[in-house]
Image: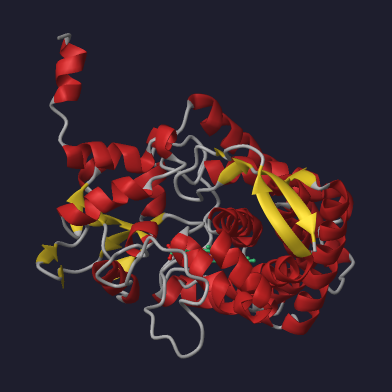
Length: 412
Ligand code: HEM
């Protein structure tokens, strides 16, 4: 046996599961690895002295407790980068987090949900017309990307001819949200280039809106900056970056994961077709069953006991949302995709896919509107959904999802 082989032979099943849970070879199914990790305990030793939080109760307790901070994530995951990702309130704690989230939240939620729903319905109807006419499509290009991309770009006020450029930039940045130790040098370089391009592009757009205000979110953010509750230029770019990247890369995965789950569970697809109102709870089941964001980090700002473990100040954890969502201690039959699990009257624990606590996803309502629209339209207009090839996965660990989804879609 070579020394390499004997080193491999010595790796324990739990260590192997840690490797598999992030390995590019297992992106199509990290769930078996999560099962091994959950069985090993709620806190499994991970890289760099971080504990992996594998189970629901402990993950929920940590997410809800403000003594756990998210401000350390750039150092924990991106310490080696030669350019800092512009910070947003996602990586801040009170009081900065409170001020910025309040400012952005007001500008964001002032926009009418009814108008968003109407626009989502219009976009989905057009895309589905095209898909049903073509029958065989690559679903990311035909629906999963253009819907959330158009929605967030239109809300912000990005001109249509620049949507593709925005997609390209955020793609590289989303990959760059993975721990630096998992990224190839060319991926780090692509992230750096994309961040620079983003700063230039959105810096220029903000200058234009300051000179000529319009009814869009960039104008609202720029004006908020000028009404005494200032956003600094760096905060403005950081905020736009989180809105753009979190605003569509995640929802792309939600849509693709949902369609894939329906194809792989034909009984549930038939159930949705006969009961299109199940589209609403089905959104939460897709979020639980196949989370678009698999993990986050937290660092203890105090001596904190969770379950039977006491963490010291500075201790860091990786909270595995996607594993917690499949914890049999919280969800009966957790590996079953059941579109009525979250239907009214059923008592089910909430999933952690939008996070929890102070950093709970600000765009959850928008993602829900988009996905409900997609599932309703599929329920009403599609008779058959079929995979044309096994889906390929992106190497991404944090924002995990497919890179291609070739499907046949047959009209009712
Ligand atoms: C399926 C779609 C989405 C998923 C799964 C998702 C997931 C998440 C998660 C897990 C967090 C919390 C991270 C943490 O606590 O460490 C978060 C925060 C956030 N999300 Fe989303 N998100 C989605 C869509 C969106 C959309 C559409 C937007 C905006 C347009 C958005 C904007 C944000 C922002 C601004 C935060 C930071 C909140 C804060 O730190 O206070 N997200 N999201």
